[in-house]
Image 1: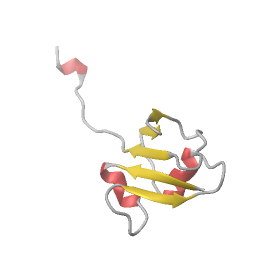
Image 2: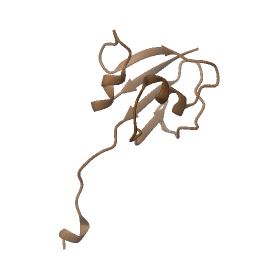
Image 3: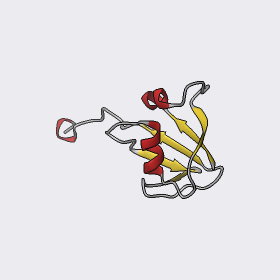
Length: 86
């Protein structure tokens, strides 16, 4: 089956060769999970922290179906130490 993957920021380097922009269509086995696709793409740990399937937050155990759009965002850095803001 075919699914669409959209990889953002630093994850875009794991798109298949020949991909344009931040999206690609990939072939997967029926019943594949988000985690298996992450492995198939060769994305190392730390794993993406925001995972969306068709615009809805999902986990690595979420099964994918024909034509689904899997969007992955890398872990975010930064933020504010709340103890310093007082």
